[in-house]
Amino acid sequence: MIPLHDDNPTDGTPVVTVALIVSCVLVFLYQSSLPGEPGERFVFEFGAIPAVVFGTAQIPAVVIPPYATLVTSMFLHGGWMHLIGNMLYLWIFGNNIEDVMGHGRFIVFYLTCGILAALSHALTDPSSTVPMVGASGAISGVLGAYVLLFPRAHVLVFIPGIGTTRVAAGVVLGMWFATQLLSGGMSAGSPGGGVAFFAHIGGFVAGMMLIGLFKRADVPFFAPARLRRWDV
Image 1: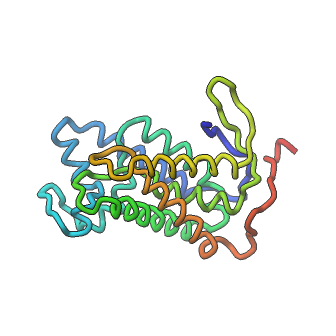
Image 2: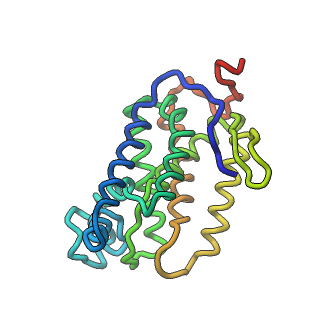
């Protein structure tokens, strides 16, 4: 299932969500403009490398403190499809989470989930020298928060071979998380790069655990589904 949009209105303008999307796009455009070797060096400089983060290896290309790459790696992506997929999920689900937290808290929540997600991935292979890049860990935190707050919200999804239909967010995100668990289990112990499934899992769990601390007190868990104003 590919989510297209949710029918869950917001009360404010998601300026942080938009700013994050714009930042990721601009960084990727710059990253894509670099030729072969400089492009690879850029990824090694600002991607999160487990062995460097944990201090078991030193790579000359790294020019910022290793812990800082846990943040900078969130703004790099491995290709157009990687970027588009992440930004689609952030656009659909991020605005509602920003709405229930406020702009400042959402920034802290997003970055915290991203850092915990990156560490979750790094702990699966602390000696790895393969850079991890992408916003998916932080966005997974947003999804974890969303599934606890708005599981009954309607999400328009595209199902290949069937078409579009509306499905409860709890079903969409529950299936997504189950896929990450299955894929993570199958990839455990596999050397080299690939999709950082354990970053997705760690980020999702972090979002579920932290949402109670970051949301406004008047926002309930498991809120009933709402329709967009023009659907009423």
